[in-house]
Length: 187
Image (cartoon, rainbow, N blue to C red):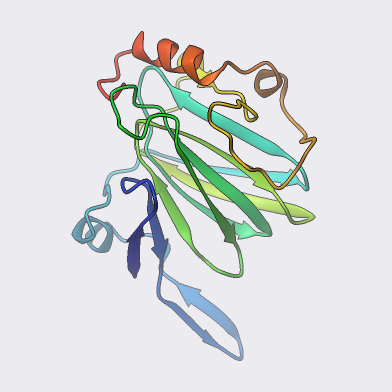
C-alpha cells in the first residue's frame, strides 16, 4: 500500500496493492495493522454504501458533534471526491482538494475530522463505500454549499442533482460557525 499526502497534507490518498490476472483482481481494502503502521486510523465504527446516478453531488458534509474521519472508495463507476478544510484555526481554512476515485483505479481517500467531504458522480452510476471513525449524528450534520465561491471547488458538473438539504446548504463561514458550536476541538 502506498499513502501519499494531498495538497491538504492531512487528507491522504491511498493506493492499495492490487493483484491482477486473467480472472480479475484482488486487493485488501482495509487491514488494521497496515493502516495503523501508515499512521491512518485503525478504528472505524460504521460502514456506509451509497449508489448514485451521473451528476449526483453529495456534500459538502461535516458534523458538529461526533466528528467523523472517513476512509472512502468507489466500488462501481467513478466519482470526483472532495475534501475542504473547515478548521477555522487552520492556515488552509477553506482550501479544497479533489481526486478521481474509481472502481478501476482502486484508490482510497482518507478525509480526517476537521474536513467537509463531498463527491460528484461522473460515470453513469457509482457505488461509493466509506468507513467512519464515529457514528452518524444527523442532528449536528452541517452542509456547506457545493458552489460556495469562497471555497471555489471546480466540480465536473454545472447543474448537479442535489438533496433538499444540500440545495439549501450554508456558506463556508456559516458552516464553520455551526461546527464551532459543537463539541469538536478541530475548529
